[in-house]
Length: 274
Length: 251
Ligand SMILES: Nc1ncnc2c1ncn2[C@@H]1O[C@H](COP(=O)(O)OP(=O)(O)OP(=O)(O)O)[C@@H](O)[C@H]1O
Ligand SMILES: [Mg+2]
Image (cartoon, rainbow over all chains, first blue to last red; front, top):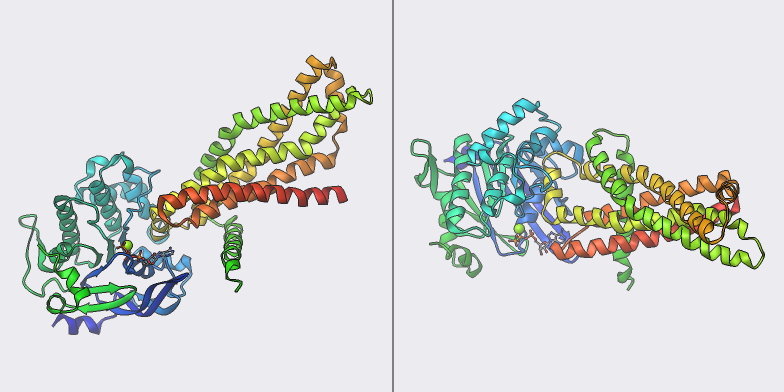
């Protein structure tokens, strides 16, 4: 049912036959898809299959060699950097390598988009309030004055999430948010992502290596009463899956379709469950 | 067939693209004054001790060498002049630039390089800042201001080094040495002696930033671009020096 209502609107993100090459490597090869408002999208794929390049292309950080990219209905393919800032201000992003500025404190890091995005530019006292709020959301309000190098890997990831959501974006991109974390910390991170999604009904795109993460994003919702993740009725989370293989879109569809697939490459990702 | 030429040609093209983008942004807001002063501090104050030290020893060595040559003509009294001319025209600008290249082109390449591989540069762009404005421009402005000043200091300390030799070993009087040194310098010597560090500043800052921003391949890549930044900027300093000196002698 949601698909019909969803597809009436303009996609939040749309790729149309996008290809990106680096020297000899075809990082993305003829990729087309649409993501609609309120949807969750899980992107799976082997190392080097182009997941990070896909997210960076969506942000306009990488220009496609061919094809077009639309974000919030605007064609960003040839948009100049100065205009892209207005689009990027509406997107939150957590980078795979963290991307936290190690010369700045946690407070300055989280406040960075509020201070620097030309379309946001909020005054210092409001900035401080919003930074504290975002850090309280990830339960790190006591680390304001610390530097990223003084935090653990999981804490840095949480600061990254705080920075991604501090601007109250309409779309959030998470690049491998649980990579390199132990299962308990990984669960904390995923719970935060689901919570952010459900509290504000945000379109969420998550790249991951762990099918477990996808399982939570697709099958659970944030319960405000208990403050925990609880199983969600089938289809309620509006989660769709994509699998990349050597830059090509090898699969796009629902979880049931992915799990029913007999393709050996796709089965590799699904079998990791449990 | 000429495929092996492609990487260097692309690199040169990208270098000039970066230079062009920096110049276009030079007078455009925002200016990030805080970053400019921070860079002036690391480049200027940070390089001061080593630049002075090298200036002093170079001046002293020149004093000894020149006086030995001058002895044959019984013209030891001209030592001040030769030290002044070599320091101000060539050694002051080139040695200072080479020292700053070793310290700061390397520093810029490794700092920007690690920011590149940890996706901080991407984060900057995603969060509303232009890395050219925020990182390259302050470094370029700071180097362009500070390198000529460092060169002046190196020139003076070098002259002083020559004086120490002249006074203690050649028995020249202070007035003899300094008057001789001072009067030998012409307007053109001084202006070219200051034009050089200004040009070298662009070489050092832009090469350092270029190699930093084009880093790929993780921490290993950072080491690689640091080395390349130092090697390339030192070579470029000597090449540019030849061209500027060519203009100088034809005037
Ligand atoms: N800046 C770059 N320069 C050259 N090649 C690149 C660059 N960025 C990515 N690539 C190449 O593009 C391909 C896809 O890279 P990408 O980072 O998107 O992989 P990924 O799916 O995110 O992998 P991982 O799971 O390891 O993060 C790889 O072959 C990579 O080497
Ligand atoms: Mg990746």
